[in-house]
Length: 367
Image 1 (cartoon, rainbow, N blue to C red):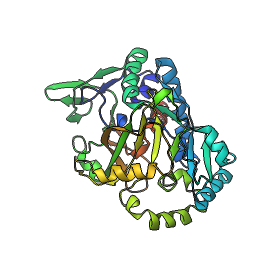
Image 2 (cartoon, rainbow, N blue to C red):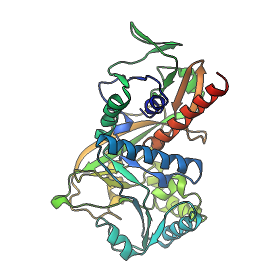
Image 3 (cartoon, one colour):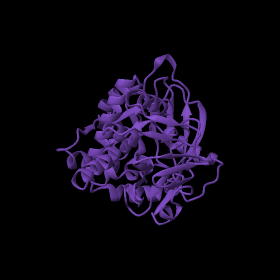
Image 4 (cartoon, rainbow, N blue to C red):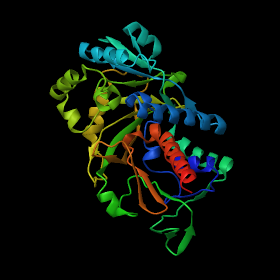
């Protein structure tokens, strides 16, 4: 949909082909977080902030619920606080980070466990949508504002430029974009095999609505999130913290667990997550992983209602060669855009805009 929007803005008539009846994949199986703090300074942070601006514009135009709550990473050990201090100092010129005292953090959020709290990292950049509603609403917005056509229940099984095929049906296009997520097997499988891409399975949960319209405030994260996201790598003391975690939380790191929580418009809490990597994943969730996530959540979260009402897993594509995205042209007139990993909500709108603008510029220079 990010690619469809970027093309429509440039004046193209766009058709989107979706194999399912509605949006049911990784795009709705997440926190709903637009998460610039996770990106390193420079290109990716700027792309995240551009994506955030686009999200905000769409949400306002389409009446989509969104909450610019920011985020708090919580420190209960001196080495966690040191990483946060390093990050503030390293990003003074580009970001609006603040290192908060325990008292200041507790004023920001009512959902923090106060016992042992040493401080927190505050960032105002992060925004929440309710992904399972918002993704479908974005599709409707694209239809209404840009006349984008959606062909639901239509799996494209073959491309022979300029024609795409779904069974006996076919359509022609001047430009074809393959944004197939974790489906590596249907279109250009040989290119995906060479791409250095795998699949990540994550487990998540949702707690019921909090009573009396209680609001958590900013999205909350424990210390493990700081070694998960590349946005923290500018902190010189991060290596020391990671070494402690490798000793203390080795089983958590084995399953790729770090813990975050966001709150939707209904007051429900979205909690996660874990990360398992491989081309094929069991469809059965591991209950002990959910319990580990909840155990770690209880080290920093203090909520009014912690009853779990839903469990699920999602699967998304993940680059393994250090690249942050995969944009290639496997055939004339065809572009694959993929490989954003767990950053799709945060980076897709910005990346798609960059790709399409670059193509428009190239076409104007070499018509």
